[in-house]
Image (cartoon, rainbow, N blue to C red; front, side, top):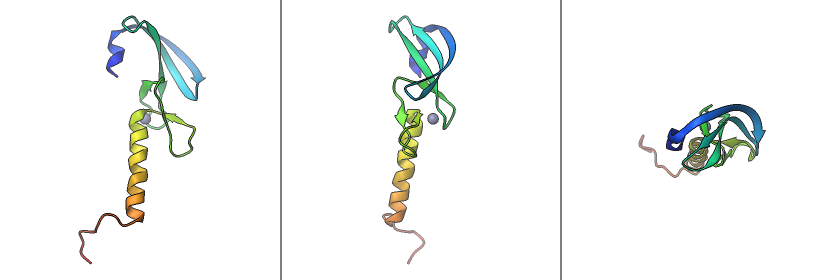
Amino acid sequence: MSAIKDLNQSIKVNKVENGVNIHYEVYSKKLDKVIKIGQCPRCEELFDAEFPALSRKDNKTKICSECGTSEALEDWMVFINKNNLIKSSKGA
Ligand SMILES: [Zn+2]
């Protein structure tokens, strides 16, 4: 979230836009635009609402990209386990 450093004003808002709970709107002089900050329903961290990830759990909840990555990894682990793709080190 390094983009937040050049922001000098923020307005607390509470609205849902594009499926994201927007908590703050901040104006960036450097980018000359308003950045919408949403809160991730999964980890409760704030993230740039312009680039949400879609939850793989229901295909509609917007979450932060870290959670998007972690859900993808969880799915991958389930797939690996189901298909026995990692050989057990416990011996046969
Ligand atoms: Zn998150």
